Image 1: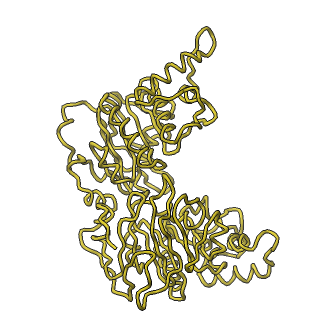
Image 2: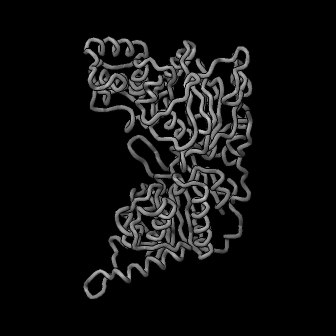
Image 3: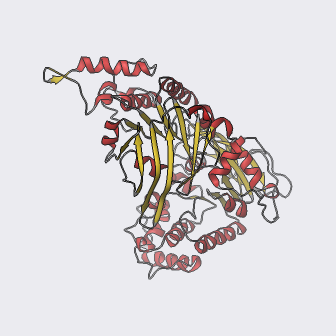
Length: 520
């Protein structure tokens, strides 16, 4: 482990975590994690999905009680039993989503639950004056009596920070606060954080964005698989090294076996001789605060991989392509014809299917049977007035249970009774029954066993050979490298590079993820 700089060695830490461990049923979420947070610094916590960051924050803020370890605040052992308890101790948190009341005024949101009183009544004037003073500390001058909803998201984030600073806050935790902010709004937030740092506040910043990490951080703690990989001075850790430490990439280069490849070309250009025709093309497709304008081409019969860290914009792009989110810029063309997707129904009608990364909340309907889950997308495409005959449903369900090797006692078995891998196969079958021309697979193998992963990806590869277009998203870089015909690398909500199959290797892709050097 590389130690942080010795500049802070003579300063006592505000907050210390020593040997924090936390286990849930069958899962060791944290294992002996230690962390020190000093006054007047921004300490960034980084790691891939499942690294343990969220669990650590929940332990720190009283949501979870640690199984082992100790938390020290200004040298005194504490054991917060709730978020309110943590806040009363001086540990305040601002979350990714602004959990305030948009219909109330700015002042009311800052003081909700802690209204100042005068003469037995709420002191409205005093509350407004105090709210204005708190926001002025953050260099925000607004009418605090106006409804919160009348202000943009960046200002609402400042209001959330002001609420967190109310009282005697010693530590400010920011959990993915920039995920919905555009570049100007991020800079406004960072200006506020720099002022708070100057005032001596200890700030723990959780993010997935590399550029933001290097723009604001003094030190970085990297977590991986529930453990602390290391703690580093930001100035002493290169971006490539940071990415390597986050993903646990081996030093050796990984290069897949050569395969028939198509040269990488810019979206919108004419097909080269022998190159597969495009099924879908985007030009400047984007959404403010979510995804920078993207040019992309998905060819007929190819598996296009999207690589990048969590938060790089992969899922945001998938949702725009499927109409789950509305783009506010750019165009989409299917077979050369411009299309506009106002909803997933439009995308389904255009021949696109989408397996969400959130199998539990956006995929499987746990109370329904295997058969019923398989029929949902086809029924949506046909409309509620054209019911699929039960016999046809049974035929389709039986076919895909056999084709995908789904282990279930019956097609009428509730999907909740199936293993994670078999649930994922049912969701894949849901889209296959619609006979799509393109299938978007967002983390289709997350959380399932090795054999089920191989079976799913073998089936997907066979679909490509039959002419289906696949857009494949996975946090496992080795898997993306192994199966993809091309890879588009994403970084900080924008595309950073494109590789043809014969150019793919782990080292070069990690370089692009870390440095953003364009390659096309």
